[in-house]
Each structure stands twice: as C-alpha cells, then as structure tokens.
Image 1 (tube, chains in turn blue, yellow):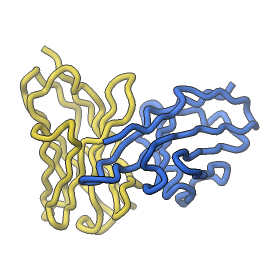
Image 2 (spheres, chains in turn purple, cyan):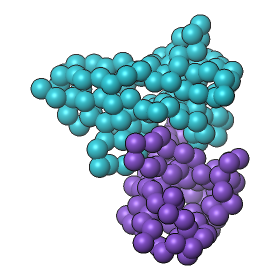
Image 3 (cartoon, helix red, strand yellow):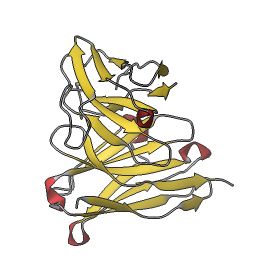
Image 4 (cartoon, one colour):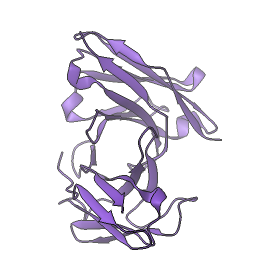
Length: 109
Length: 118
C-alpha cells in the first residue's frame, strides 16, 4: 500500500475558512474521500469522489483535486466543525487496498 | 433507516482471538460490501479488510493477512470480523461500515471496543 499525507493540525477562527490537504501518488488515478470523526462518535462521510457531498452534509464542506493533492475546505467554520478529518483512497494495484491519511485535527479558536 | 449494529465490548488476553459482529438493516444486505476499520487510542483510522456479502469474497489489508478473517451469514444479515493472536497493540475501537463499488464507506456502526490485556 502507499501513504496519504495530511497536516497534523489546522486552527481556524469561527467564520473563517479551513483548508486541509491530502497528498498521495495514486490520487491522480484514484478518488479521494473525507471523513469527520468526533470523540465518542462513528466516522461520518463528508465528501466522496473528490468533490461530491452526501445528502445532509452542509454546503460549507467542499472538496477539490489537483494532481497528487486533494483538499477539503470548510467555509464559514462553526464550532461544531471541530473534529478530526481523515482522507481516504485506494491503492492502484493488487486488491485496491483502502488507505487512510494520518488525520488532521481542526481546532476552532 | 439504514443501520449497522455491532456487538458489545470485548476484553481479551494476549494470544486469544476476538469475533465482532455487525448486523445490517434497512437495505439489501447483499447489495453492499462491509468494511472493517479500527482506531487505536490516540491513533488514526486503519483498514482491516472488506467482504462482499453476496459472494463471500474478501480482501484483506496486507498487514493483517493471516490474522483476520471476515465472514457473513446472509440468513441474518450479519457480518463477522475474527482477529487472532491478539496483542496489546490490537486494543482499539473496531468499526464496520457499508461500502459500494467505489472504495468508500457511507454508513458506519457505532464501534466495538476491544481491549487486550494480561
């Protein structure tokens, strides 16, 4: 398998924009997905196929892709957005092993 | 509504095995894969493998090959994750999650705590 690299932490003031990057060599050929994880709760899918938002996810969550980097953007951050965010993709070869990034802690100041 | 209900907390000794169940409801059980993901204390998410409930076919993460076994019982819409030769490093929250043709997970169980200690 291979690695997906995320920054360990991002801090943002309420109402501002948070951007979380995720880099990996297979990302030009494999979609990326993003999950939000809060303490004591199960992960929640917030972006799929690089840019698509599942029903029920606020419009302030968006995704983009460029080459080997994908980005999760939270516009107009709210206190409830404080959480860990993980990118996920799949290996190009073999069984298409699922790979997660190391996670980014978003702190709302 | 679509739901995955997992079995309860497990406490095991090193060297033992653990079997966690995941019961699906609210959708066609054989129409979606079930993935297993864990999170150790203070660590990130880690994928163990997936099963196709329709065929029983499985894919495992290289790291867990030979130590994890995924099975299903279609008569009761339930999947199982069996992890053997446990060590303290296997102490974690274990999640099952529904996946489709694309390798992402749209519905998650609430997690099962597995604690390994002598």
